[in-house]
Amino acid sequence: MVEPEVLEARIRAAIPDVTLVRIEDLTGGRDHFQATVVAPSFAGLTRVAQHQAVYRALGELMAGPVHALALSTHTPETYKRVLK
Amino acid sequence: MDDATRQKIQSLIDTHPVVVFMKGTKTFPQCGFSATVVEVMKRLGTDFHDVNVLADPAIRQGVKDFASWPTIPQVYVGGKFLGGCDIVRDMYTSGELAPLVQEATQK
Image 1: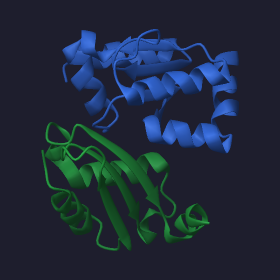
Image 2 (image 1 turned 60 degrees about the vertical axis):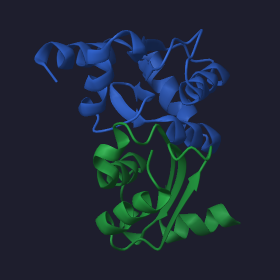
Image 3 (image 1 turned 90 degrees about the vertical axis):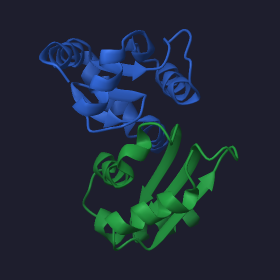
Image 4 (image 1 turned 135 degrees about the vertical axis):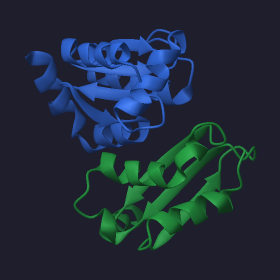
């Protein structure tokens, strides 16, 4: 288990230009999360590379404390389209 | 990861046009994310090679290192790592996945 705030702090530290990090605890058990991450530096990266950047930020947390992480990564431009 | 595991993974993705490393099997997925990928492939009418990572701890850890990707399922199309459940579902919804899979399975 891990607090969602810890995940957010890790992501913000590793990807300094993030404009939005939203972590939702899907079950209340603090081990199944949904994360939305928006950063201008994601532009030009494939979705695989964007997700890898988030996974790198979370490091060892992905190997145990976090059982499941649904991940949605965007640039500010693509995120605008999602919100529409 | 040892060499034998790396070679085994490489051989699987070289041999089969579409490979899904998953928890459980295509007929009996044991995780919601893996089940989603199976459902996407079914809707595309794509036959794929399933590898149940729960049956092989070396493969289970090996595929994570192989793709620098810490979660299961993992999908390979035409020998290339495509992503996990979220990416595959998004690519299916956007229509990007169908032509990729079609090209890979027709070779």
